[in-house]
Length: 247
Image 1 (tube, rainbow, N blue to C red):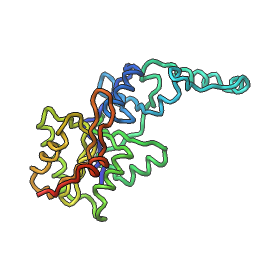
Image 2: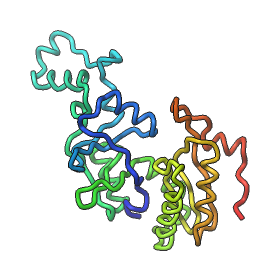
Image 3: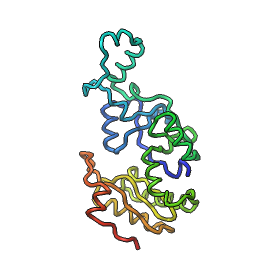
Image 4: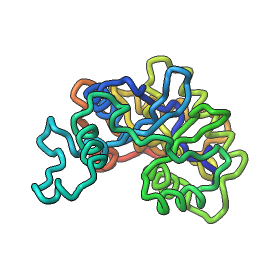
């Protein structure tokens, strides 16, 4: 498998000038734990994650040092800690020059980079433009949806995945940026979330209409767009609404 086979497209991003408050709201709205930071020229300049919000003055969690520890710490270290806990913009807290991968990067190399650098996501860059992102969640989804055999993703499975995406893009009222399809042996798994009643069923119908699709499995969670709360999860659905066989 390559990055293109598992990555999330339609990546949500923020700018360096975005406020910390707006960045946090964007993460909550789209139910993501990390965002690429794109400048006015469209270039990737950083990555901001939930971890960058842990030590904040607003929540009373800013790093605290005793007198002697402050005395021993380098002034540059103290200054950096202050900026990260009190800064108002994404540029103040983001990781600059993040590690990136290409669409042809093998999943094995992706996992190696995540382990080596202790990171949870990697932007996918082509010709200087962010075209996707691979997170640990994408790899888990691939494991759940694709690892029914040891063979790599077939060309026809890759084509089906692109056609499913194309069908979803035809639905202007569908929040397709929340949905990631994976395909193995013609079986489609839909991962992510939806924000309006029946959108998950519409996504299933769209996928079922793609030639070559044998079955569609719905793992989509319903999220309230106002509060960001999960109304029900895929596990809840499986318990309360058993999936009917796809004809």
